[in-house]
Amino acid sequence: MAAVILPNEGPLSPDQRKEVQHAVKAYTANHYISEAQVARQVGIGATTVFHALNGGTQLARNKVGKLDDRLRELNMWMEADARRRATRPHEQFVRTRVAKKIIDAAKVAVTDGSIVLVVGPTGVGKTMVGHYVYEDTTGAIYLCLGRHLRTYTRLRARIAATLKVSAGRRMQKTIRQLPIEERIFETLRDSNRLLILDEGHQISDDGLGFLRDLYDETHVPMLILCTVDLWERICAEADEDHGQMYSRVGMCVTLAGSDFEAAPNNPAIFSRGEIRQLYQGAKVRLASDAVEYLYNVANALGHGSLRRCAELMKRTIRIARNQVGGGEVTVTITAELLRKAEAKYMRSATGRRMLDERRSVAVAG
Image 1 (spheres, rainbow, N blue to C red):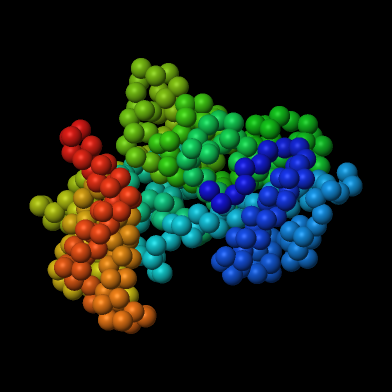
Image 2: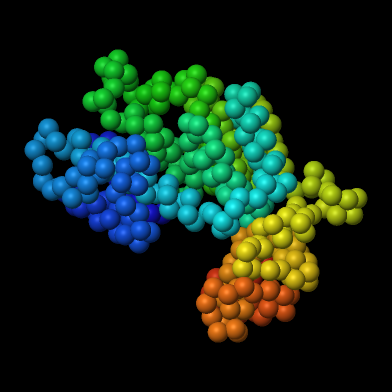
């Protein structure tokens, strides 16, 4: 999480203002982002960004509200930008069959004004495609329901901040007097703005209840990216709350199984051609045995899939270039190099954790 955790309403403390200013300055310096670029992305003036990041933290009461509003906006921008960078492992987006399924599901949600679940194992690219849909859909809202946003209170606060409904001074008086939930409902009602919810399986019961109420009040389309855990939860008819959510789901798309069978005996999620598109570039060539190696890794459900492939490729390219003296030279990746990189990876702390996860999956199976 790049953003500083802030209260949703009320004035910030001088220390909180300093923390946001320091965090945004450090983030933009680290990624070589100018204040003018930040201003364009946030939708405010470059001068406003400069004053927000360099202004004093002890201000007159009539100026505190404006500064805090700007700092909250910059804080949210920093978090969104960090997430986009973290989930963009390839220079060019590839429309794999998985990607097409998710994109089509988003279109159904918007067209029908419905809730659509996309269910798939970790590592198949749900988050990356979710960001693509977010950037490609006007007015869309993207939220990752990890441990920071899984509860009703935090989810409500983040949606309110995203919609800027907590800045009551700039709202109509009739809306300003409403409770925070009603402000959210009033802002989203009949807007048809797509709400993209990643890591949906992590949401708490009260958070799920809030989404149900939000849909009932606004009919805003929702695309929920999750593992099968959430689908099983809301299918549990014995649970009254989840049963109520079940009746509101318009469609559930599964990313593994017969939908992806290219041939009767080939239940692969990703094809060999897609693997080559994803990992071969201008200065990176894949030998046939490397394509086969990555194909098997990508389709090994529960073992990391594309996420594991991306990490493996980074390490392999580094090894291949070191063998020829370093630099951005063109290299050919072979299965032997991939095996060498994976052996080193599995000796690392991250690799050991993944190996433990794979063993637990095997035992559970």
